[in-house]
Length: 194
Length: 153
Image (cartoon, rainbow over all chains, first blue to last red; front, side, top):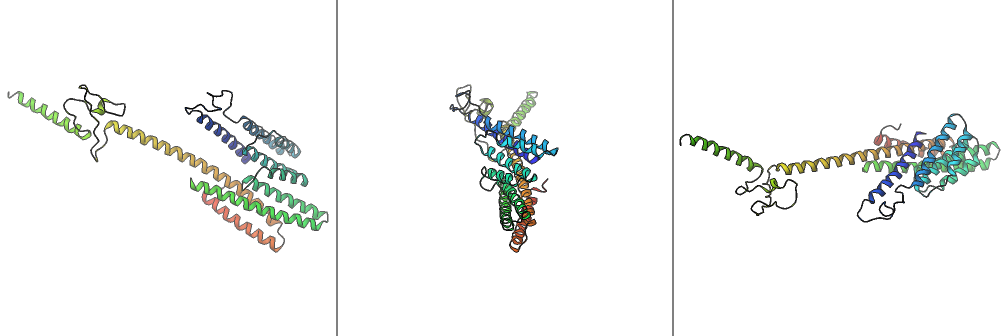
């Protein structure tokens, strides 16, 4: 849970830093569009993104409270509100949505809703490309969804379908391992070059 | 005359001492004209005008000589600013490295979960090979993270 808050707080800080850079650019001699001297009405900070991140944080907190009292359905409802929020175009917003879909999928798996969990994974993956933590986490959850599907199919006596679901699970989990491995390598390389 | 001679001697000695002291920091200026760096303490570029209208360019310090007091102040200020900039840069790097370690730890946790699930469903030779490969990668990644960041909380 703390990690989720940390991610949201970091994203909010990044957006604020971007606003600060915008303000710094406005200190140049030539008037710039969007700067107070040129257009006083234009806000220096991306308010829709800030508002989205703030609402997302509040809804994650609400979901935490529901989860702490064992109300999984309540937690799902909070996160469904989050993913239904009007989403401004920004990488930070996409990452928050991917993370929310991953959490939704895990909660649905807890309730045995394999199909619903699969839909959330698919929707989440649409928000992230490349080797990022969020994509790796979604692949990990996707593997667990297929693992659960394989168990359900095996219980229903559908051996062939179960075997195919299991094979998909192995492939997805393996891909998750590879993606997170790249994320770690890159993070440590960044730390080493500073 | 005998009473005046010692006084003259003392005055001459004091003058010589003063000249010697001034000579260590800056060469003597001609006559009574003030040195340029004394007349212009603001550090402005260019020679300061003198009372006679003549201008004296500030002479360069002799090689190996310690800087003049004003020059030393500028140098100290510059050194202090450089030190502050270095401190800011180091602090930024530390914060960035902390963020990188948090990202690495988060990814490592996901990698551990994925490997655990992968190995829990591996029931044939091929799956077992993939499980072993994932475990090997996990061990390597864990060692790298531990070496760079210490333990993940």
